[in-house]
Image (tube, rainbow over all chains, first blue to last red; front, side, top):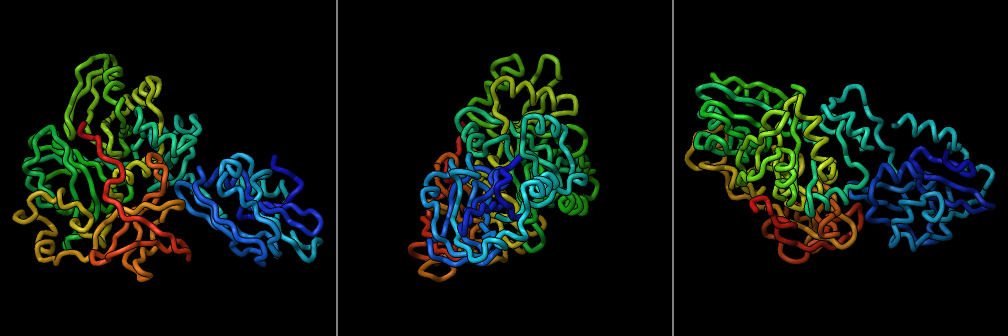
Length: 128
Length: 366
């Protein structure tokens, strides 16, 4: 079972709300599908994202994939050490492999439209 | 990230080893209508194992044809870009299937098994088109498609592969030369039909196994120490060795010479074959296939190649090289492009270095 303290996007990002900050990463399923990672491109703090907007790219041996913002918000912090430590993203995508922190305006509605852990689980099972 | 495609499961073909791959934990993906192992855990480790010891690949998705009849030699010679009439019995030869315009429909290997008999392996993705094209070019020669006969192809590649085959056979002194066909005796499985061919640039063999041989041969070679290798590593290895892949370096928009495949066009200036007239009338190509190395991120298929900010080409294939531990790519680049190159990686300018092909030297003749 994946962590139930956060919400999930169909595009395999997760979002964890804490006050007016949303921590964003990609799921273990995303990492497994990509395979061995070779490159990560993350944005700089200060950029304002719209939900669904691409904020970076992750590349594996085989493929390159966009990273999509799960909510509207301003990037306040980036896990900049991760680009040189892709192992952490590969092995701990729900913890040390977080990607960015977003400051959001209306926390109550920020993550509406995303899936809970159980629904995400079902989507992933159907994709297998 | 982008959503993975839902697998259309039921409609995919399975090789006889499909259940064995699943049991080994393979990541099975749709490929050219087949469900095939992409990897068994690590593309990079599998690719390195082939260059340092030996790897075994199930490539039973590749299409297998037989050509039989008294005119097979002459008819194939007219049907293919390179000569087959002078191909010795017991030898394999790399060849191209061309259209009337002299561009590439497929690349393939012919194996001459007798004076009036050839075996041929073509790309899975082109199986139907190749079969129809070749059948239309035969007069009296019989073409039989045996791809789904329950047997298959196992590629054993890497410096330890000869020793593993001797172990399987229980006999020493097995030493076919590059492109030789051979029969390898076994204690209890009958003789194996083996060719010293491959798609990795390493010393290696392709085993054309019968329905009763495929499972035990696969299992015994793994038990003897061969590493199971998926299609992901196969792509890395073939690109390191700069061996072309249909749909990337070669396709109907490419002629043999710009792809660096003139060597496969044996006798093209004088022979009569489909595409000959077009090839002989063709002006020299204004572009060539080049190797690119990058620092961090692999140039990917379709990325524009730039020289002084101007587009001068397109990337064909790009991967992370397991052996060189850096990104490599092939691209068609205008022959008159002088100076530093870069690629447009989804809007970002990434410097690349032009390097000679192959990226990793071939050891297939050693």
